[in-house]
Image 1 (cartoon, one colour):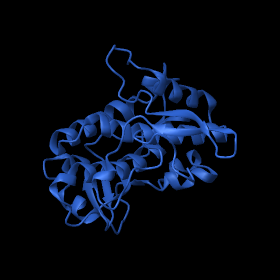
Image 2: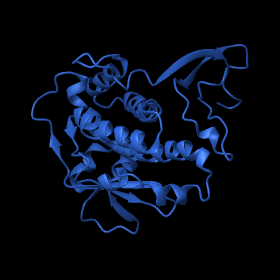
Image 3: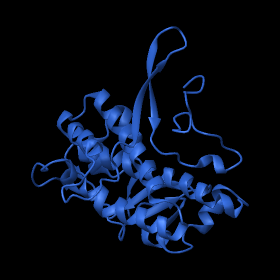
Image 4: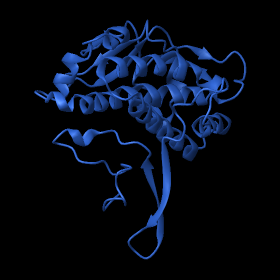
Length: 249
């Protein structure tokens, strides 16, 4: 973790900070510049590591699975910092990705720690502009173009992690004002310029029987991540294609 970021990741959130490291930090994994990953064919060796010998018809599912590692390692720490008023520098050009031996994303190598917002953000889209506009938008656009995977699936994967981490931050009582901005971001169907917000309501909570005569809330994604195209996976426990949660969910 970059030392300047340590105060942003207390207690249960400490692991998130470990996914943001200085650009010059030694690392046993392969570090690849983000733009290189986004070139045509840039993901090829890492997808093959994740799922050796996958059939071409399952490629979209492999890319979707890979993107989950990418988005989790990026969104959980960057959103945690943004909620607390800290902007982590994540434009793709100077950022590197540490890729593990299994092809998955392990951490992001940053050009620096960033710093506090110069002024209180004017609403949710300003607070998260560096994440949404500077990084996620070009990454999703490039992956969708080169990998022939729906941008909506990729945005759904990203939104799922953003909603998850905001819930954890809310439960911890961390920076309520920033958490409110994050929830407002997810609730907005349109961006300030009138264009569609791709992070709008990535999940929903359904009231379902709890199996003991009562009711409970079930967290369900609004879009399938298509992981079941890979033979080793089935539908995940919060898949929208399920009529009810599986046992234990």
